[in-house]
Length: 409
Figure 1 (tube, helix red, strand yellow):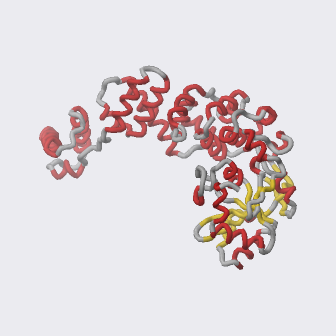
Figure 2 (cartoon, rainbow, N blue to C red):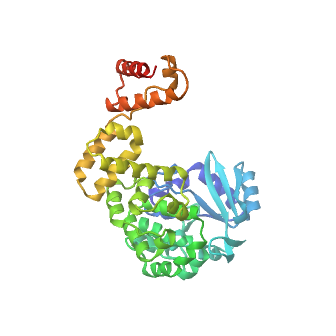
Figure 3 (cartoon, helix red, strand yellow):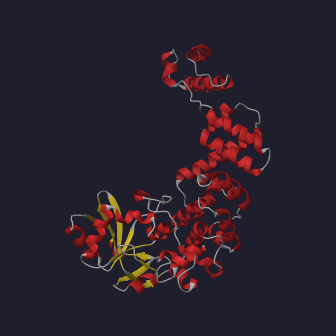
């Protein structure tokens, strides 16, 4: 085994596997094996290769109650985090390891499955989504690869296990997962999988908006996101998610410049520039803060393009650094005077964000009585302060405050 599998020798990992194997059989499975094969071990225990972000998952022949008993007998913590689906989270020396009983799907509704626990490894791997996610390893590093996932991983392929339409009908979220995993592990979509995604796209109506957003937003930061979004658009998948055409080219320019740190709000604003808050909520139900950031970005962009040459501090004060910088990146990606916008962006990143230096208490302390005049005085001070370039020195602030108070008495 390569150095990327060094995490298997970590004491907490060995303790969990020893506890499970004392009572049954346990194997690592999924991302921790898949990513270690390409040199990306789980981040908490990375030894050799590039650290990934994958959790450690274990499949076992033990039923959930047997898993709990085995872990506790070894002095390890056991938390029933998904016991109805057979998942127990073991914790050893602060390291969480998800342990799940082998399962077979009895019935599915396109998103949720009714499962039966089993001791048959073949039933367990056949219910998984992609071949590269059905690679197992025992505690000593011996691989079990019943779906030929390692060959697909080496060849840069993401294939559904068995019939793609059947796999998708079991869980329509697998359509979006197909594009996300392909973007990370393959050069191009598997033709059979892509065709099945197009055929089954309408089934995504069964998915919760939150899960759709989770998958789409994770796709933004994958290596080949522009190409995969274009493929999803052509297959009619994105149309099932949001009723607006995607501007893949604009997103691609931002992605190439910012990958892997492209902000979600900037990605959405680039892809669907005409989608208002209502449409975005209907499509994704994204966090309220994200909607606010998109709206701030759009307002900042309108201000910056309308008032070219206006003091940059005024825009930073009104919209904040985040929205102003996002807006400038979007304008630069549009290709219109790109270098000018990038120069402004550099300045916006360097300047301090002004904060109004006075409040109502300061005006009252200076002699104004509470009431409507107080609000008018604050507005007057703000306008003068902005006109003077948002001074921060106490002498100029005091002089401006005195003048505003004198005018209002």
